Image 1 (spheres, rainbow, N blue to C red):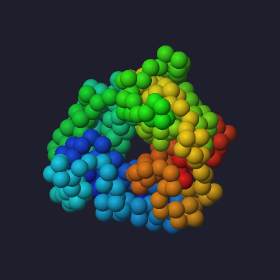
Image 2 (cartoon, rainbow, N blue to C red):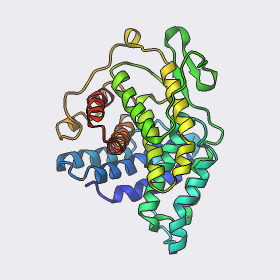
Image 3 (cartoon, helix red, strand yellow):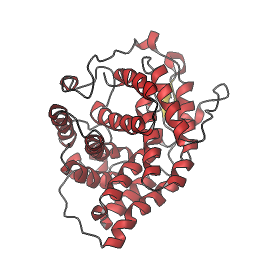
Length: 320
């Protein structure tokens, strides 16, 4: 198991992220993802738990400071992770906390917002509050509401279309030639996401959060459903379909930027965690643990063991 302290510290940092930027939510949510990864994978070897906690401490220590300009924001990573004495809510307010965050997410879940980060951050906060309503202090709930509001007017992100096409904002990408994904249920979404990982993970595409965030976006909708918000999760399907469509519009850049490499070690073994950093992806500290958590959510949602096994093999490209 991963130490419970990371869940609490992550939730506090996530609720403060709005002070810096919406995307500063990466930091606190990664700590929460690390804890939940350990909870979902209860039989992780001690060496893996130790390595995950090592990476979470690296995040707390400020090793991934790309998500906001501390000088401009007037907030530091130390500020986000500073200790806090939370006011203990009465039982009724604690039980309502997750619903308040869900209401805030409902204002922007209908469209792809920054590669699905509105849904990703909200869902992990909602899981934390559903499991531990004692953390539903007013300052936590109000901070999470403000974090969700940062995404109200955000677009879907950016994609790289090679040397000739350059970077394009998602709103400017023409999707006429990209078929609309046809899934209308969460189960179909999981299968389509895993199939995309199987097909595309070995190839380099850049932008719209890549497969890492397509996985996390799908897992967020599964978690919303499982935590008691099925209607909200279903509303999020349109945004996930658009997210996938944007990714499919991106060119494969193997010739331009080189092929991706694959790790040989299973990420559920201590040997894998000897790789302290990614050789091919940025923001590896937060993205690696969040993607492992997200993939675990998807894997536990489907009974298709063959599909999961194939996707697990392809995941080794995303974790290199």
